[in-house]
Image (cartoon, rainbow, N blue to C red; front, top):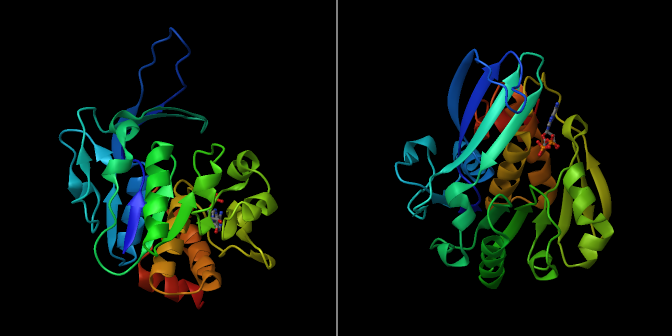
Length: 280
Ligand code: ADP
């Protein structure tokens, strides 16, 4: 099982000729709502791969669990605050402006985290929820023989006790700049640092050395959510018993395939898509 710990948001996307300046009123062309949040995206991606996936998160009244197809939502905690909201303004020239209201996500607490029953699996956490909840999940996981994959997004400096509980840290280059050098992270006890490089693939830093995995060639339409698909596939592959090298290769393919359509969840691959693309 993969236990995903992270945020769940509703995304309100507004397409507008231009982004309103302070004090200005703009009539926009159209709006649409979607499902987002790194926790929701990553859990949906694991389920799409066919993995058993439980999501630990907080949502508000009226949250529809059908927005998380295939995910075990029985551990979701219902909060008095509303479900997290991301308002995304997209201008005709492609520029965007995003405001996020964390809502219920801000209240995810250590006591909300329980490991699902069954053999040890993998915890996959991200940082759009409070650090104490993430640290508690990592601590519980490490103590019970689970592995911990941490996607440190958005990046903040991480406490040494948390770093020591992380098996695989998956930052992009911007996040890595906040966290410190791979050598320092490995010295702090992180098992491996996998740096995602967009269209350049990823770099794997381990105590034994550094390797680079090229990207899977793809016609990218929208890279939103590529990192979430990458992390989900990595956690899923580790949970299925694959070694890190193979898990990283599959994660690169999953990240690439996820860029084929607009939206974080529009092009998530199934396991068969991954093996077909990986062998082509
Ligand atoms: P984030 O979205 O978190 O910034 P990246 O942009 O680094 O993460 O993307 C995560 C992974 O997705 C990359 O490591 C790569 O494997 C894959 N990926 C992203 N963009 C592309 C692309 N244009 N072509 C092929 N693979 C891509």
